[in-house]
Image 1 (tube, helix red, strand yellow):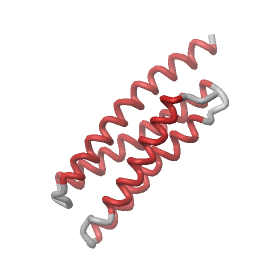
Image 2: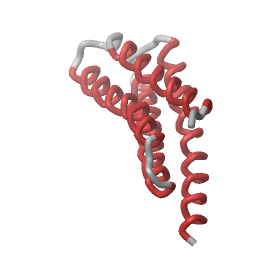
Image 3: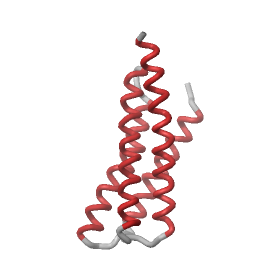
Length: 125
């Protein structure tokens, strides 16, 4: 059964991953730029990939667990974007936009995680 909100969030997380991959190419060609870029890419693509997996969950408990992973990846993406901006690795406005998007996704998935855990706990009673 199609879920327009889930489809919209799938598209949003995928766009975030693609935007981060493009942004990574603008980071300085230094060891720290490469290291941070690699970590950022992994966490940002993890948000999208793990959200898609969560949408295919077979139970409420599995969904709650997978949303927890998505939340961790979104929060990690926000962390790496904070490092990029605070360390001065990028002065681009896109860095702040991506940081904002990572924070928004973190908030969305934090709320989803709470709801999913409550729902899974109610069904197990």
